[in-house]
Image (cartoon, rainbow, N blue to C red):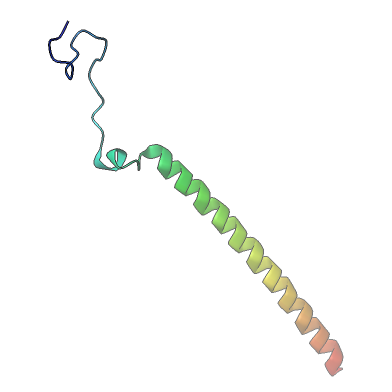
Length: 69
């Protein structure tokens, strides 16, 4: 058993994985996946909103055309 409490050799500790700077700041690969999912959701939302706006503009133009004739 180790004399030093901060260095428990033989206590099943083993070696720690070397973390990258991003992982030390809690920006690991799991966060990248979360960001990608959020970006996908945002892109889908923007696409839906543009479709709605396009449909509304198309309806306005159609009503303008009928009003002019």
